[in-house]
Image (cartoon, rainbow over all chains, first blue to last red):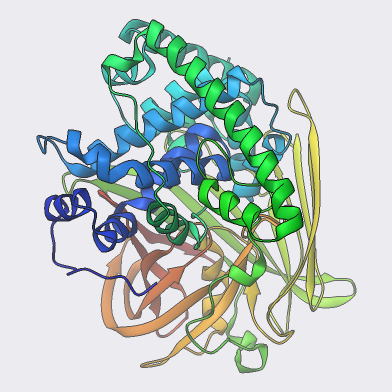
Amino acid sequence: MAIRVEPSLDPAELAEQARGGSSAALGELYRRFGPALFRLAYRLTASKEDAEDVVHDVFVGLPEALQHYAERGRLDAWLRRLTARVALMRLRSRRRRSEVRLANDEVGAARAPRGEAIEVQVAVDALPAPLRSVLVLKEIEGYSHAEIGDMLGISAVASRVRLVRAMSRLRRILGGAR
Amino acid sequence: MIEYKADLRAALRQLPAPEPSPDLLPRILRSRAMGVRIPFPTRASIAPWRWIAAAAVATVLIGGTWVVSLSLSRIGESRGSGRDRIAELLSGTMLRPSASDEHESLAKTPLPKYALILSGTLAPSRMTEGVWTYQSTTTTDDVLTQPSGATRLRLARATYAGRPAWTVNTARQLRAGGWTEYTDTTYLDASTLRPQQAVAYANKRRMRIVQTFSADSGHESIDMAGPMQRSWRGAIAFPFPREALFFNDWSTDRLAALFPAIPLARRWRGTLYQVAFISRADMRSLAPLDIRVVGTDRVTVPAGTFDCWRLEVETHLWATERSRMWVSRGTGWLIKTQTHGSDYVVNEVLESYEP
């Protein structure tokens, strides 16, 4: 892909160009932020296919979505929230369709070659999506409970409760702490 | 065994994730070029009644799309290109999630940057038995420095299948936990230094991983007991020649065992393969690891002061990550490793060596 823009452009300028329909700017935004957004989506959906679809949808819809980006905060933080929302939407729709992901049992192990990491990953993947979402957003992504509540449409207290449940269930599965 | 109570959070943050497929950006740009637009819900639209309305619309859309798609696919079957065009248009959107057959093939494994390190160029006679202990600290935002555990590497002579071998054992100490047992053991052929077999246990021996390697392939079995009981089996054909050096760990800790035998020199560069997890063919299980000597430094660590080669090491297993390593010019010991993350730096330094 030979599309390139001036590498010195800052994210705000890239956003402005992407908003105007520049494919080169969209591609550059993807190159700068896409891999990190993919990892976030992957951790939320526990599926590489779903994560790629989430990132696909985020970037395909980005030029229009940028109309709502007020440039009050950092673009990467805004993109992460947007990606989390799209990933959570996908999780909800998957639950509504009662999809059973046959490959999901193994996907965690595929990422982690050694025992400890495999166990933690398998245990995280085994959590129900509502608990896993809070766990990922809080413990890996570092969002506050208020922000998580906002993303998930629940209260901050509910987010806190879900995190406690998620951690407790993880520890029970892993058999480490009592 | 992880001391989960204290280190679960740290373990969660260290979970690796794969990289997106290289064709994701072209797919995005193709979708845009074909006019696909995906609106995102605004905060106001998350109200329950809107969800219901949206669900109704989505149902109609999906149903309509399915009918149209079905009709076009039938037309496509008879006319050729119609179905492809619609499939391409909708591919990857929420209306048509990508098929599950996009498994990453080994063909997409990054290529080595430098010449492969061949067994014939190694100097295994420089290897010595001993135990090397490394302490790790993590500095976040250039401000907060905290201890982040330790690693112990033990190298000893052994025999494997009647041939001279080395055993490499690794033990890890997490931030607040005790030392793990020596339950991660790899047998290296004494002359080629290629792994022959690896056995690892975890979590009170409830998990057992066995990897067996031949000249051109690797096999793996993982069995997990307890409440999450399950098993995996897998094999992989190596895309590198049988004389090429590789190691079987997802972290770069194992390099410390190999450095004494690698002929580092000014402007030296070489690539070896890193073979991680091989039970799943759809995930990247091996990748080149590129090493380049970029200079020399005198480095002082708790174990002493060493004249070192400064190396740049690039791994591509989960994502491309770069580290700096300092290797003693005299002994070949790994003295220090420095890895930069988005907002943190991890330093691992040699604390002690015991013969």
